[in-house]
Length: 180
Image 1 (tube, helix red, strand yellow):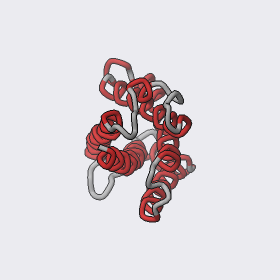
Image 2 (cartoon, one colour):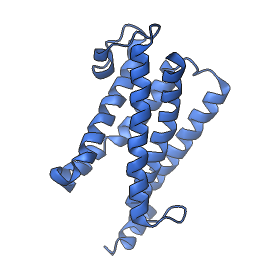
Image 3 (cartoon, helix red, strand yellow):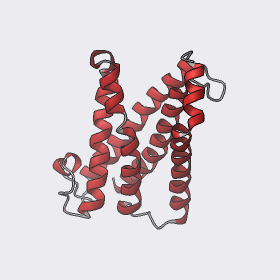
């Protein structure tokens, strides 16, 4: 269970990085690797759900693992875990944000665009919180291969966010969406 839980967390980090990048690309109004805009949004949604599956696998198997001793309340209430409460608590905060993002994503039509976007901005907080959890709580955090993987994910996420914040992004996005 421990190995499956760790693997689920590692895969989740990579998938949520892809989700963040695809979300930003989708918002830009650009195509991505030859996919039309609507396909980028569909891949973003599908990857989000796949990332959620691996995150639930990560949390669920650690709840079943006798060594981790993660209880249900540890998975939903931050900073109360018996082991490593701060770093596990960060993972709990990220998990709670993912749940909010998932629910609002599924209820997007009923919530309306404004509420959906407001809540979806929390994805920009979820990623670094989950990243910090991975570096602080992971038993393989000191492993060179994991460090290279994690920092490659960080590089992709930071690059995408910096692009999103750039003046060129807003101008290009507005022009592509016909708002200029």
